[in-house]
Image 1 (cartoon, rainbow, N blue to C red):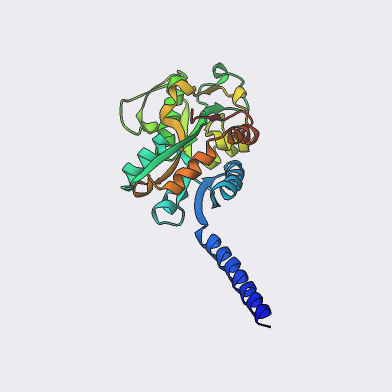
Image 2 (image 1 turned 60 degrees about the vertical axis):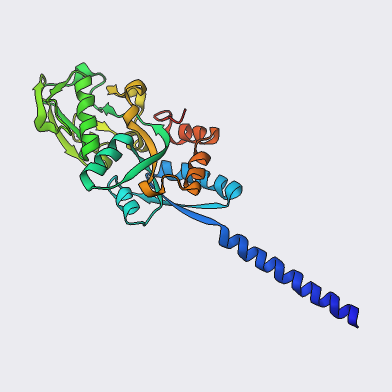
Amino acid sequence: MEKKHLLRTLGIAFGLTLVLAGVSVHASAKTVRVGVVGDQDASIWRAVGKETAKKDGIQLKIVNFTDYNQPNNALTDHSIDINAFQSYNFQSQWNKSHKTDIVGIGNTYFQPLALYSQSAKKLSDLKHGAKVIIPNDAANEERGLLLLQRAGLIKLKHTNLPTPSDITHNKLDLKVTTVDAAQTARSLTSVDAAVVNGNYASAANLKLKNALYREQLKTGGQYINVVSSLKKDRHNKTYLKVVKAYQTEATKKNIDKYYKGNTLPAWK
């Protein structure tokens, strides 16, 4: 009887150990909330999440926002832990405008900004007085205007954060106006041309090869997209593991899959 009692006691103790071990493992698992913009990035990050869960015990919660203003606000109010939607240029301008301390902790990809049209096949097809729209957030407004300038369509004053009012030469008298970046591709049916960000171009099935004009990677350093955190978290080991999990061959393949050749990996 004493032997049976001892075995029963040991069995209960062993069972409790397993339960407690399970609780311990569960408690040690980390959740990182990642803010993105668009279904393509959400899909890419979900795949990354499967790897971090398997290798590092890090659960990624993907928060998909609808515009570029939300992810940094969510980062500063601690609704998310990191985000991955913006370029270095956008991040810098955001910090200046909003007095924030957001920093990049790892490169993701480069999406060339491009000028698209449904009526024109090449730049020379644009007519006098053509209506052209560009994104209205400060960083992409500047970027869009610089794209038009490099294309030889306009000239700008030398100023920080130029707007359409800073156009000094406009040989075609283009009517340049701004809309939310998410609306640029959708507006192509009502304007002559639109400057569209890569993620929205891909979502609208716009092909980079058909653009009237596009950015080149060699001039796009400040426009490389980045994983961002608050400055105080820039050395967070868990967040850096997430970045490492993103920067893989598998992610390269998914970038090509979801962005259909419109986006280039930029961590090497």
